[in-house]
Image 1 (cartoon, helix red, strand yellow):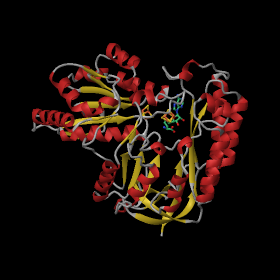
Image 2 (image 1 turned 30 degrees about the vertical axis):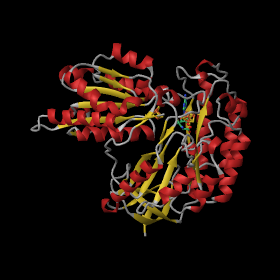
Image 3 (image 1 turned 90 degrees about the vertical axis):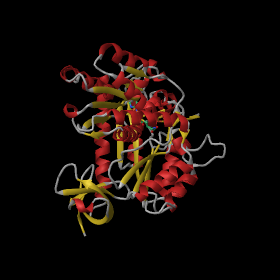
Image 4 (image 1 turned 180 degrees about the vertical axis):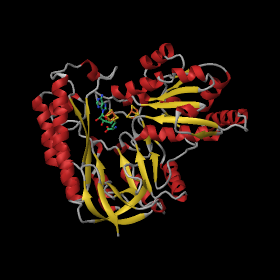
Length: 464
Ligand code: SAH
Ligand code: SF4
Ligand code: F3S
């Protein structure tokens, strides 16, 4: 694992200054950044925006006004990739009308050779292409594009840790804090280890300093991010467990809620379950992806646990933390999955009764072991199973939400509701979205809300 040195980061800071000094200060320069994929990518975009702001760009929310357009892409499923190609293709006319606009594509998709080759040859209006490993080199890449020609920086180098990049976070109260990068698990369907590199953890000191910094800026909640947070610190000379890190984060004054994502069942420890149970600040919420209920499929996915082992963990969690809210990820139609295998997944959903399930139809990823495995079910059958899963789960999610009816919940208000401008939106400790009548002065505050209506995906209430 490589740490990018201070000297290397200083070189990038010099490029930031060079671009800043190049700008005609009488004109506002604008940047449009669009993010696909997971929370990790969102966090990377916060850094891209931070660098852009330091270079003198203002953020804008449409491509027409922008002097630079960046797509931070996701490679996890084919539909995410198709959307990106569609959106880049649509910019051909804009580039013809306004040749000075810089169009950049970065992130996980660009870490795949066949994709960056396609952009190079077929999307010649794209000026910049760089992968996840080159994120910290963005200032240099942009400088070269502004002063010279197209830049492709997509080498498959070892993943590194870079500290000290400026951030432009979303407004308080919730701050995303990456605690580790990459993944070593190589689930057979998944592209993430190939595009994000080997697992590496940030130091406790750097994480705690960042948590303290966001606390001083008025953030009340932190979301700790990693593809597999349970193996945090595994490769340190002096091992620190994720549970120990959580206890340290709890000590930071001003931070009142702590969430984290994602946990891998194979690495979840009793120590972690105890910390969730004991620490008031750690939210009573656990996202624990099972992916499938059939042991045969779990083995073929290289998930390293059986259904029984998974359910034992869930039972332990439920016993120690009775008010825990549980969620999971499911893949439907993994190669070789039969209808009998799929029934095992349905059984798990019925037994666990998750609050929320994120389900996906299997998508073939070039270069992963599952891409060459044979299918048993037709696309039609996979879709039928997928629909059935949604139906089963929607009923369970609604039932779980119904249990909140009449309760008074402490809500951290995040902002205006996405569905109704007269409503504010926030979350319960368990992570449920609650909408209620209120005004923007409440943003960032804790309020007590009585739940008066329950839906499948959210709750409604009134402030008391
Ligand atoms: N590191 C996390 C999740 C990473 S990707 C974890 O291990 O839980 C988020 C989810 O996308 C995965 O949990 C999985 O359910 C889904 N996913 C990953 N690769 C996929 C593929 N090829 N097709 C369909 N879904 C996939
Ligand atoms: Fe992908 Fe598995 Fe790693 Fe999650 S744990 S990112 S699903 S390889
Ligand atoms: Fe997608 Fe990359 Fe995240 S592939 S899910 S954006 S790590």
